[in-house]
Length: 234
Image (cartoon, rainbow, N blue to C red):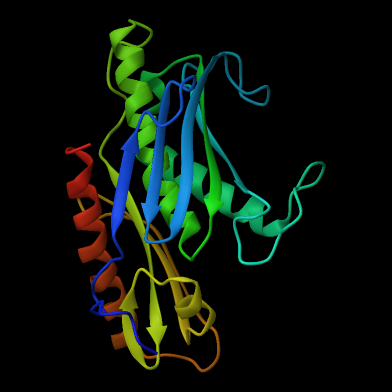
């Protein structure tokens, strides 16, 4: 399966457009090749109802959705009940973002990251995490400027990317066709310092070797390092 001139360890063209929407405190349009996701950060005073009133920490959570025309065939809007896949993805986004934040430095605030996929061509969850982090970062900077928080709660940046084994080769940043034909499918989320938040790797058919798993991780880390290196230029 050809990659349209892209090397196995090469990402698709990645682009982040800051302040893409008007009203959200932080917003970013994320593009990984033909995958496009609008990520926004909204801030509310107060904590979730389940959190102890005496707790001083705030909260970061996430919601994820696909525009009906985002995939190659129309999907139904999830108006009343979200699918298991959607729940899994938004939990992944939320816990990934909480892993890079000191919640005690944003007391009595809830930041919700919305990731809305407007065009899907593989890697939507990892693109959502990258864009979600940037939207969060922009929102935090504005909260500090407004005096609503006194310290930056972000511990360090995070990045995410997909990888896998296609045609017996380890490949980075799979598009939809590659993902659909992958023998092994991975989603990796790392901090800037290389700590692991998520390393989910699944054999879609035959089991794979430990050496291949290590190569997947190392290839993904190179891609994530590149992505995190883009953040300061946005």
